[in-house]
Amino acid sequence: MSDLVGDARHLSPSAQEALRPRAVAALVAGRDREDVAAVFGVSLKAVDKWWAKWQAGGREALAMRPRGKPVGVHQVLGEAEQVRQAVLDHRPCDVGLSGQLRTRRLIGDLIAKLYRVQLTEPGVGKYLRRWGLSIQRPDKRAVEQHPEAVRRWHEETWPAIRAKGKGDGGEILFADQVGIRSDQVTGRTWGEKGRTPVVRRSRNRFSVNAMSAISTKGRMHFMVFTESFTAEVMCRFLDRLAGHFDHKVHLVVDGHSAHRSKKVRDWLAAHPDDVELHFLPPYAPELNPDELVNADLKHSLPKQHRARDQAELAAETRRFFHRRQRQPHIVRGRIGGPHIRYVLDENPISF
Image 1 (tube, rainbow, N blue to C red):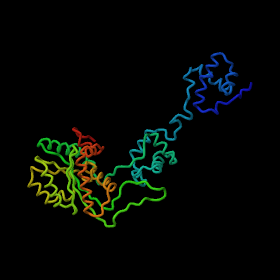
Image 2 (image 1 turned 60 degrees about the vertical axis):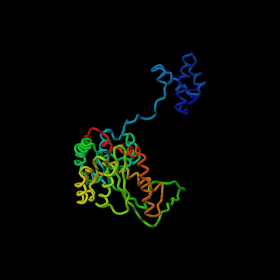
Image 3 (image 1 turned 135 degrees about the vertical axis):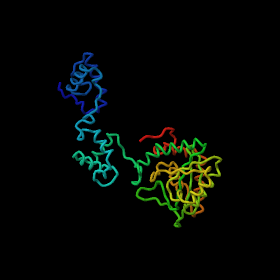
Image 4 (image 1 turned 90 degrees about the vertical axis):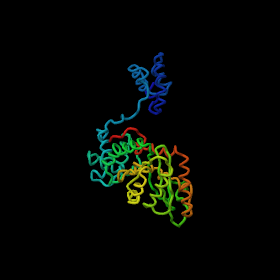
């Protein structure tokens, strides 16, 4: 009988794995190797190979093994962790390349510059996935931001504000102003492939502004107005805010000129037991939880309504804030983000 009764290689790996123990069992039972090869439709060489594996390692040796080279064997970039860390530690612009985003092409250029190894874009992508990296939308930071000021805010200023609020039985609120425009469109919509969907909007451009303040418990206060944000508007907001509390409010704001104006300073001097202002580090909006409420407003409003004039836009903005006032769990949920979670922690964050 010929050795080439059949060829196990034409079988799938799972089919081969199912045949091996049955063929070996037949040999153990005393069947001739030629009969086993004929019954199972494989070559004598395959039968002999399975028998040798069983004798050397038992049933486990007959299990299917992954084909090809093990992951990491003969990689062009041998010191994988070192290269991965180099990619994470360096932006392309840090080493003389154009841009700040780590695209596959620029990462390939970075690897070529640091390690003198040329990789294709698909090859770079395989390494990135192997290193546990993924494509992500980056956070934005102002180049003017001072890391030392942010560190002091976390380790010194914010703990002092929190202690002062507890000491005088006051309430800490984070405030910010936001503008909404009639021609703003956010989000995506489904449509026929090759035909861009059309969103109808008024050609008359108008806008409204709002000032809001939130607590770490999700409590919200707001004021919608149509004029520009000025010191007079800020004083009006402070008047309304103070009227809601029978204890002192510690209000955390950014460095807007209206917040630091003489009129606002005079108002604060006349109401020392009502409101005290605290200023965030310059160019650090990510530290203000109220920024996420503003983002929520800008994302939600255009999806649900389309105002035809300024009065309708102001009414829709008020409806949004009234709805969020009834949903403190949503407002509080915004505070769970990585950059603002610090306001919920009792212990200051160290950097």
